[in-house]
Length: 420
Picture 1 (tube, rainbow, N blue to C red):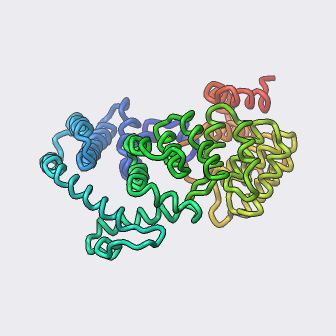
Picture 2 (picture 1 turned 60 degrees about the vertical axis):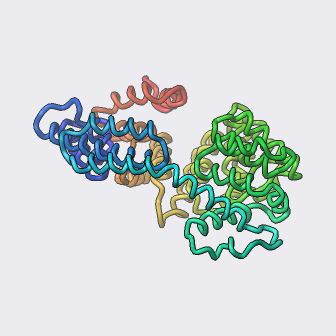
């Protein structure tokens, strides 16, 4: 669908948009698109969307019941009842039967899972000190094997020097980390609170649980404690405690503190993009550019790096260099072009007025790519292109960009497109 149809849809456009959304499994979006339309075609789409929403809520009810959340299961059944138009009575009967069955089996299943988890935890021997062969990963029970494999991966994610500490903590720590993986941060924190606070792995677990519970101050405190205990920040699997700390500090309104954490890490740390963003936020544009240059040399196919580099250069008044960064990014990622990068490049050409032919070419490329959810930058691109081509909606698009872009967007519109 074109950007024009997204921002100025006719009733026929909206019905087509709803039909596409329904066909692609997005009934809520389809329903909203036609709710205030009249006519048999719109009504038929709305009924089909609401029947589909009823089935989705039945599936959610079954899933919630399987997870032991009976209250949420009841909510979804009630929603399903409110949406359906008499279709699929057999699905409603089957869902209710499944929910009853889940409830009846839950206590027995919980006892079995607890026994299997205990067996799997005991089966893992991170230091190779030996264990009972009857509890080994060679068990015939696939659930025991799966849990044991997950536990082994938790241990192997840590640098070898820290594994003895994990072994000393024993099954309670591993159990808590499995709970974290399963989305039960509160349960994990309750277990971690009983473990040795002088252990770096415990501090890491508490930091993860605090972050999952949206308690940033506690997560920051635990990450700092972990670094003290571990003799510095540590990479644990795909995460790095120093990068996580910097991110939390920045999100808490302390970007300079976050940047200081990253600058103290050894070269090659995985937070290069975050470091560049924090340097940009604190006004160190030269430092941001140097950080991004090194990151691009290491990972030349990351389109986000080129986009931030272009923004940094343009903020510093170097429009041509900013466009060159985006062109280089487009060349480096041409096997799988990024729509955001194309859009930034098109906006850059249209805002600066440089190379009009190339600007028109890139704009056409950006607008031809599929778009699921237009952002403010999409509206701004369309407004700039309308101005360039003399489209009668140009002024209306400018006003819409002013009203929906927030302070930064408003400043950008007024700077690039003054009302003179």
